[in-house]
Amino acid sequence: MGIFGRRSGEMQAPPIAERELLLADLDGVVYRGPHAIPGAVAELNRAGERMPLAYITNNASRTDASVAAHLSELGLRASASDVVTSPQAAVALLADTVPPGSLVLVVGGDGLVDELEKAGFAVTRSAEDEPAAVVQGFAPHVGWEHLAEAAFALAERPGRPPLPWIATNTDWTIPVARGLAPGNGTLVSAVHTAVQRLPVFAGKPETPIFEAAFARFGTRNALMIGDRLDTDIKGARAAGIPSLHVLTGVDRPKQLVAASQDMRPDYVVASLAELHEPYPATERLRDGSVRVGSARVRMDGHVASVVSEGDSPLNLLRAGCAAIWDSGLAIYGLRVPEILYEDHWAS
Image (cartoon, rainbow, N blue to C red; front, side, top):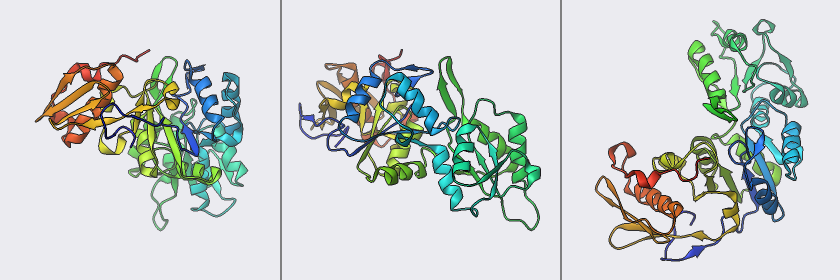
């Protein structure tokens, strides 16, 4: 039942219960910048003792081997085969689009080049080489000249069908040690503005990256762990699997209460320790209020009212989310007290 339960006081099974596969995002879940999030490594290693654990990342700048090496340095038990990347998903899409061995213009870094070469494609950085497709992903060194080459290659030509264009992901931002920086979605938008069309996307929230994980690990009975509603959670919902939102990364309580239907997680936790703990059920009472633990929230028309702050800020957030989401009303038309989305977990 995830965030929605039935009986007052009931504790549901832990989010990890009865799963066959865990999918974990990286930035904001495992680490921020170069450093592990406190407690994340121990909890993920603990989970990995029970079932396969895949690290699913939109970051296209690194190879699967380099990602695994970084995770190992942080103390995680991880190999390259445990890492599912947006370049891998992009190359799978490309293989269904152009002939084997085709010349591909790359906008991006080693993660993309490595996967393309492993799949037998030839790589160029110049539109003058007449590539059969363009594949675009994030890398810190990507600049105007790289985006311009993509635009030149993708330009409309009389008598030629549109050149295939595959982008690894739509992330507008990426979290780094100093804060949020522009992500691949921002760079794709620059090319889109020049060529007036959009690429096919491979990474979260699109389903190809999830399908790649399901195929590799042989099961769809998976739980997605993420910190971004617009990629991790939306992608899990699109793929038909439950999701857990952890408050250690990008999206905060304010974004949770305002989440659209396609971005609502099944679980909301403060840390990955709660993967292994019974999860509090949510009860809808006869007076129209929603209760989680001893926290209660009721919608009075377009006004969210706190009936009881309850036993913890997290249960109040959960109750507030359930009540607001149940209302079916757009968040911009609601009055929501600040206590419902106060961020007790910012670091």
